[in-house]
Image 1 (cartoon, helix red, strand yellow):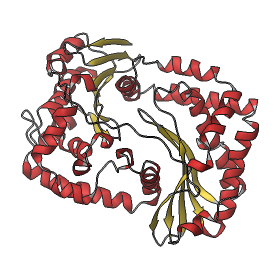
Image 2 (cartoon, rainbow, N blue to C red; image 1 turned 135 degrees about the horizontal axis):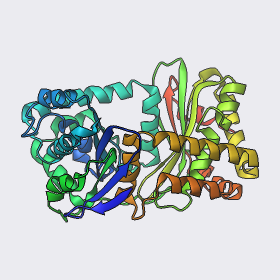
Image 3 (cartoon, rainbow, N blue to C red; image 1 turned 30 degrees about the horizontal axis):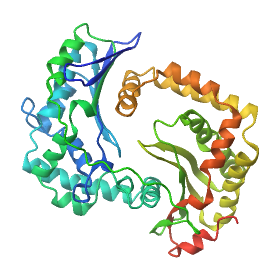
Image 4 (cartoon, one colour; image 1 turned 180 degrees about the vertical axis):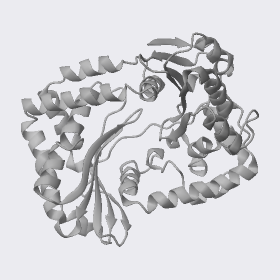
Length: 422
């Protein structure tokens, strides 16, 4: 892997992958829903959609898709709360075209009013689709209550109301404010063309710097509560969906490797504690998992489940039984070894794909000065002790800072809270 900077200071990574004829070009910007204003909630996601709606070189959505389909490319984009990414994966011989096309999409898109109005309707339907999907929406509700009072609690896609009114001038000003060299990173992974650095400097290296403040507000921290705050959606479902939220860690926290082990052994795979106890032994759920999401200055540890609505108390007992055992006794030696081996395998399998390897470097570069390689991350995971995992569990699973989300037929939050063990 070669890490360098383009002529304008934009971070660039060249990541060769042996045994492939494919090249992935990935561009990432440090922008997402947390950087927005209330009036522009959803702008980052809107911009992502508009990148595929035509540029000066490829003026219509049909031109964009046909040009990429003509070379058999895979292409897509995604928006999170803190970053947005765009990638094209193609035969290595087409890497120059992929670089030029991504540059045009990011800095020369047309944002035609007609296309913007059409895409507003598409995004509103996307919002409706997520709200109709309990397995997706339960997560959004949990972060909404977990980060109440902060833009971190806002939905990435915005709301139908904001999507209907945000205008072209405001959206493009928001783009220009955040799509700047100091807030972006680019990675080229797979078979690396010999002249790739020259190609990157001729395109992305020409983007001018912009020192305008991004308006970012730090999260003020998690408050303590006598009863857990809850966000609910009343819905006539056969299954109830419950989210439990606890504080998490930021990107830069030195305990992130212990956090990855903790969340994985609790609910990160099919041999995890929650999967075995709640689903396999209890027959109470089809889906139950634990995940950790890091942000720049905080994080969230979430347990999400779709449960038998007639046995909710039993499910809560089993969930907190496993949490208590981890905090009181810590993980076993066998559990530590098994989880480390699992994570090692997942990392190695994922980086066989050039697009995954490109994202590994680009995303970390947006938030950290030092960017560890996958191999260095595996080495760090091996050094985590079970005492470190137990200590982190004691800190994370603080019931006074827990929040909840719920989707199901119940309308009384106290009836849901009553299913929690004392």
